[in-house]
Length: 375
View 1 (cartoon, helix red, strand yellow):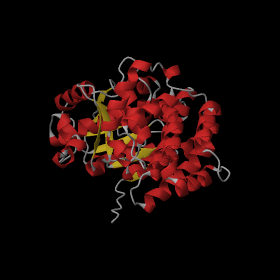
View 2 (cartoon, helix red, strand yellow):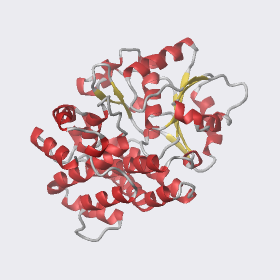
View 3 (cartoon, helix red, strand yellow):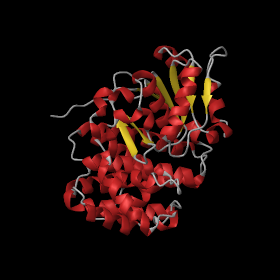
């Protein structure tokens, strides 16, 4: 039996930020806690969003979100949320800011500690309430504005994925205007993050044909328009299409992800490197596509069709060529990952929530082989 659920409201187009005041009122948020990071503030994007608010709306700004959000940062933000008397969260930024905002909203609604909500330990059933949350993405990659989950590096070193329908934002404000100034490298990395979401969600064994259709449509858009967005960041059509790819990628991974994300989450917890999640996805994707090939014959044909590739084309080679074309690293070694990191990567990848929905079960040996191939 398939359970098909699409719950959130998304305002999508240039100028969508003008819908924010109405959505705050609808959600019952009178004093929003703004979860963001210093870079988003410095780029003027928070001001671009909050300029749409009524002049008398008080806000509390937290711009201390790390590149890979941590439990410590979440607790610091939650302290500010409480001390400033906020009644909802307005997340503005990339996936990190939205994930931190979701964690704050969860603590505000269901209390702590955060670790009790680990779904792999049955913690999802403990999520009883989440403070109202509205998400405004400023990158086109993570899709967290419409997703059921968030990822946090815990104090004990684990990078946990938390998931519940209650974590879906009340509304998503997707305004491609906010991505026009995104740097080239970040455009490439976040774009491959979105493309990976579409591919991995489609390949899961979960039965959800509507989500499959959304994934393939997102892939069709992203694969064609990412090179244009990287080449010319002011290309409004390319920016629109990449934000739609990002949103559709997250709508589709309601059915899960796979080994790419299990490996990326494992590598993303290496504190000395602070690696970007989207870049990791791009680098791991070719090796995982080769590993999954024996289980995905007909589905690979449909991916080729969506990507505009010839029949029988090597998907992994196509992804590697795309990575090179848009200027992403050729492998993990170029990103600072070393031989001694491999045992830890295997350990954490095997335990990751995303590993459960990979189309082909991966052993410890399999993960080692994929990591070495990605070096």
